[in-house]
Image 1 (cartoon, helix red, strand yellow):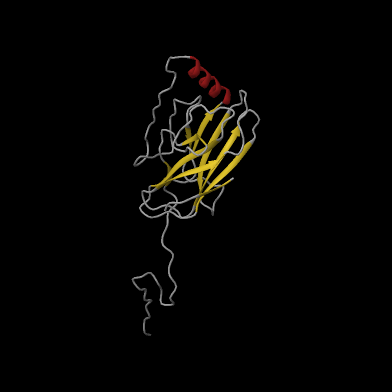
Image 2 (cartoon, helix red, strand yellow):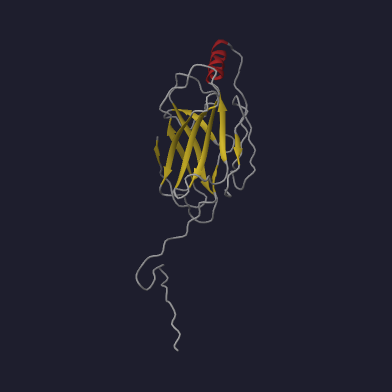
Length: 211
């Protein structure tokens, strides 16, 4: 019997003319800027980290995501969840990166918080997690968290406005991952520390956000 072999052309097509899909890897998507891996920013000024969010200000939620793999990633989502730690209520906001990310590239994920923070002592946790569209309930790598209370922000603003003493905090961060990124952070500027939690998996550029 004559042996038959399958020919595949160098351009990635098989003999039938079908183009094979390029290999992608979402498992190495990580949060970068690990001093503030997830943060609150005045709306439209997304490079400004607000360590003490307060009532009466229009805010965005932000995080940087990088691809530490040697191949491009596929599409992915960044879900921001604002949890009221006192009542258990959670509001979710989703950023979508349909184009994926090239190796070593990063994107700033931004969503608009469409409400105003209350003027009270409510404790909030802002949580960000990365997901593949095919597994929207299974975080990639670790989620990151920023905790705050609006009244602490108001008190900080009042203190800075009524005193000539410099009351601004200092911050430091640890880098425990490869490159400039890991899923962990330490934010000493905030009322609570930024923390990261472990996920189930190990850890170009335009995006859209959907509230």
